[in-house]
Length: 247
Length: 247
Image (spheres, each protein chain N blue to C red):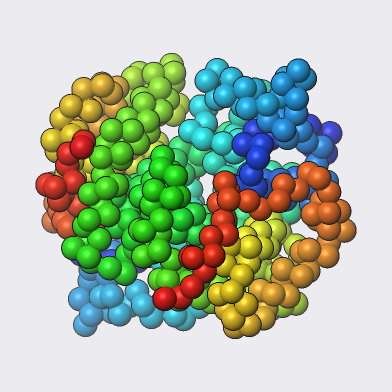
């Protein structure tokens, strides 16, 4: 399995949902190609992504990210991770661990969609400026209620996971859901630096988890490389100062 | 496995996300208790649901629906279905089928969240009336663009699934994702009867799939029973006539 070469298909200019896959591939030491970030002259670019979506090879993906390995095409972020993680030793091979990890990842998926919809409450088809008024209505509740509710849930998972030494959501070692949690915390900090400065203090275990992930050699190397696309205002987590306020 | 008794925990007054689990349990012929719909005097009601969420038995669920079987608690709709379906012969036992089904179920999950957010674009903490203005902004795009995009995707899955005789999303027989697709189509019809009258004509294979599922003896019996909660304006799919218009 370690000889597999994975092709990742995702929008080339943003971290977005693709970043959860990138982090797992990087920390797992996988050989992979981030296809849409390669030059078109070498078969890359968004064109390659669109081509594979339309071709209908395997089960048609509804949207990126998806991966190709051999002749298999696998889509939906949580599904891609559930496929990759056992191959990359980022989850145990037993059914109970996989089920638990998937449960956590799906809760993270719900959370990041809410984070996205703070700046896009009316729809992804409109620019932020065209739904800024509604976004300002949505943001305070997200900051005051939803972030603490979600982070409180994840903090309790770390606290109750006796084997995890206070830095893991599940089991005794690093799993892909720790990587995803790191990404969520990083994204929230980027999008809402003022609000998160206060909120983060309430969740020390998640802070420790985040530091632990950031310090893993492979992940640290990735985060310092040009392969890590900076956060920006086209992705899932966007910094609009006017939304970074609890009222 | 067929001797297992499953406990389903979900809000008692709505179909909501719990309905995807109910349909799988019913069509799978499982023995189950819909706990929150039982009398409090018999250990049921919402109190029983809240108690189990707080108790922290197993991995804490973030939200209903979740199930308990033996001493295991399993949450997140798609995850619950991925657990139940192989036990109830509603998906094949091979990894490739399960992965494909999970991919489809997660796309359905994205779709129903968008359907929900049509009537709750600002947040679930506010009544519909307090976000009606924003909902009216969101609905036309959902009807004109999003429903056809999603249904087109699912229609192609049925069309390209040669083994499925034009009535199955995946493989040769009924799987849990067919049940979920039935539920989505039923919900859309309930919420947007005017718009769907036209839209449905474009997706004849999905119509055939829906009829096929509705005609399965166990599902037909369930749909005709008092165990099937009627659609209403507290669930995922809500009928607000003012939103049932493409402009």
